[in-house]
Amino acid sequence: LTGKRKVLAFAIMANDLRTKGIEIANEAVAADKAENYVDAINKYCKAAEYLLMATKYEKNPAMLKTIREKCLEYTQRAEALKEGVHGGGSARGKKKAAGGGGHEEEEEEDDDDPEPEPLTEEQLHKAEQEMEEELGKLVGMDSVKVQMRQLCKQLQLDIRRRQEGRGVLVTIRHMIFTGNPGVGKTTVSRLVAKLYHQLGFSSKDAVVEVQKGDLVAGFVNQTAMKTAKKIKEARGGILFVDEAYQLTQALQRGQSDFSGEAIDEMMKVMNESGRKAVTFVFAGYKEEMDAFLEYNAGLESRIKYSFNFADYTVAELVKICSMKMAAKGYQMTADASSGLQSMIETGTNQKLRSKYNGRLTDNLLQWASDEMNARLPLNATGEQLITLEKQDIEKAIKKFATSRPPQKKDPSLQGAGQVEQQLKMWDLSEYAPLFVRAGYRLLIDLLHLTEKDIRALGVNKDADVRRAAALVNRLKQDHRQMSYQMDALFIDPDTQDIRTWLEKRNLSEFTKLFEKHRIDFEVLGDLTYEDIKEMGVTEIGARRKVYRAIANWAEDREFKKSEAIRAKMLAQDQQTMQDDVGQRLGMLRKSLSTLPQQ
Image 1 (cartoon, rainbow, N blue to C red):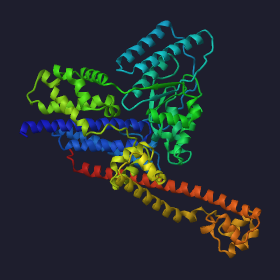
Image 2 (tube, rainbow, N blue to C red; image 1 turned 90 degrees about the horizontal axis):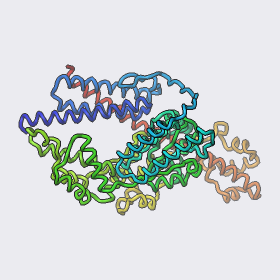
Image 3 (cartoon, helix red, strand yellow; image 1 turned 90 degrees about the vertical axis):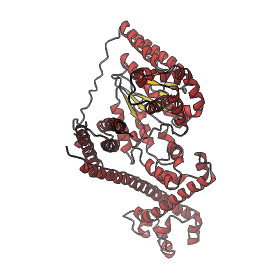
Image 4 (tube, rainbow, N blue to C red; image 1 turned 120 degrees about the vertical axis):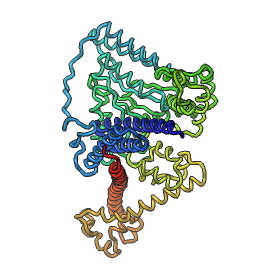
């Protein structure tokens, strides 16, 4: 590059990295305020890392100083949160820098819910008119728009019934949204929140967005507390549970999971009414959400509205592109505009478009903008700077062939990173999204996989199936070894020997037999009905009594042992996350020390 072009390229790179860092920092502050501290730590680190990268290209001394200060601020906040989360202290008590300010304890909301003044005809008309204006801005969604109008009408009629002193037949307002990513589910949930608030059915128009990781913790009773906290945050508005089907995937496979506590906690408040009640919106893929409702019959009965969001057509994607360009003040040449639909149709397929939907337009315009910047000379002026040509779009479209659709990641889901890391070690990284989406987020979940299960996930190549099966077997061996090591931990402290164990179960008459055959706790759980007979317990009644006592003890021991192993594996995952955060903070500190101080 020539001197001028190099300076300009560096300036653009520094600006892009700085902008991205600030964007992530804003997300970190939001997570911090919501007390999602693990997420906040990760994002503060990531923001600082982006800003540090920007210093390699930034040549303005004043800006360098500002960047350094921001990096230090974010790093210090991440360290403070890490100390609170992992050090046993209170992260809440450390709220200060980087937008983390706030009261030490939240004030309890006033539970008084005075009946609002009756709405006038003018207010009802205004609410309906504003909803129509918002619907008019949405591309496609014909069936959703019809349902939204029906919802508005029903709410207005309920208002009239109340004004005339009549009862309302149904007060349930909860919803389920089904459809692929990028079809506008979150957008419509905000529109619903606004409508409910304007018509006086809710006290605020806020939407609190959560996923499984925001509701489910790693240990008993913690999930209920975590879920209750989110419900409290959403009081008077909407709790939008994205990818809600993840709450039942492990349970449907018969695996132990604390997600059931989250569902129970939500169901406790779903029959509540009033302006401060929470409205739940459960969202996710159609097929998975059908299975989610089938598993929770009580939950299904509490949901009144079901909206299905269809994929965008190519014509609708073209319209979205045009709207987004106009909003940014950009335009296309005539041939690019007329050929855009054809280029999308030939450059993508239905399967790919259904994975992207509205996000396809974001990627397309970003890549087309990159191509335009590469094409333009530095002395470009006027409309050249804001006009996309056909060649820009054609080159951008080709990138979809090698690019992966945007994936929603939930960093607070414990164990997902460990599963992905294990798959990578076994050269199975390409299948990680399949495992994670199917609910295999903890290493312990993989223990239950059979070869049939692996193939059902979408691993079809025989060599890959064999490697995945080998991974599962290796984990089983580790689990088995851990189980053997922990056997001694699950002996009642009051029964240190078999004699005492028998006495506590009114089986003292068999003490000599057990001692004769050298039965200890190591083999006790393996005794069969026939083994007991061979030991000399010939009477059927006595034999059944002994066998039942052993079976109950073994079942109780195995449950306690499996829970302890699960907790240990979760703790290992958390320790790995903690170590990773520590390494990142150490690297940030080291890099900050090398930056110029002025």
